[in-house]
Length: 234
Image (cartoon, rainbow, N blue to C red; front, side, top):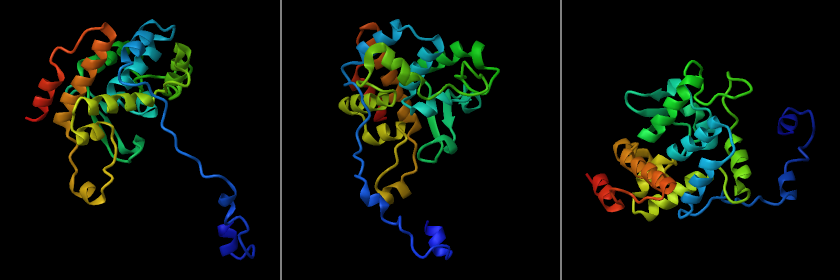
């Protein structure tokens, strides 16, 4: 309509203020459980009647704290097994910049388990209907609903659980935000701070995966949060 008015096809854009006829949508946080609930979640994942590949995708997203579409579309050519990193190119990232994720042993174990199924294909988690395409990003959400988490938790909420737990444990907020691939809100600071904190994020992600493993087994962390924080300070 703007184009038509500017081109002289119509005299005026009568739809110019149409948005004012609709209420402004209210942003709501994604449903997520509190950080004390991972044992319940891990137990549900372990006994759920779901496809093995779906379970591995859910665990992959939990371990890497990536967004659903980023996790389900992981490609083998993005994985560096030697450096033990996963680099998501900017074209697939919400913030339009490359995101390098350190892969802990638990994430590497998932890749090993997926190799027979998909190493000869493009995607780590190929669609079961069309292996040339990735799994649907909503697959994890559908599985969580079947596990009894409808209205309580969505796959994107894994990131909220991680953020809350890591902040509560006293990790540096810059490291946490970098792990989540969030953009620095302060424009001046963003312009000068280009670090991806990779080495310090390795320690953070190691703590996170140990936390999830402890939740799954009912054990406690071997190293403790205080010793992990001391490693981060090095």
